[in-house]
Length: 110
Length: 113
Image (spheres, each protein chain N blue to C red):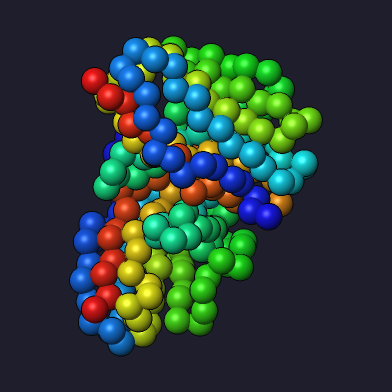
């Protein structure tokens, strides 16, 4: 079982809709969770992090963490074509550096 | 702050040649990471340093790979000899701590022919 699992997509949503990206993880000791956005040909860029169960909102982005079910999600409200990118989930288990999922490609259709 | 600076941006080399990738972390960041990204394997940690000391090199593929950090503002990743399967994008990242978000450089796209 991979440490971090994401559906590769592509996830296609119309402009203005809510995009929901999901990530599951295997290590129950994971302590902190991150969402990175990576545009094609560019480097990963940190957009959200969450440490505690529940929701964390930042502008159009909401991260949700459920440690009991071992999943973390990212909601993007009012999706824009400029949100089209690959979204990487990463986590810190307390033992080594961040482990990344393989990413979900999001396409926002105008 | 100029962010994490990597060079070169692109490198094309012949199999068997030595390749050196360079990285300047963000000033004040105590942690420096080297990751490699491929379509097949995603983003993989190769090695990381804390205060210029290598802490975890378990991700380094084999002896052909070596990394150094002679001071707080410079690190190198060397591949000798290079092979076609080393073709990937190599990212350097830095952070003020392991559990915190990392800032990535622009990456070096390596092609070994």
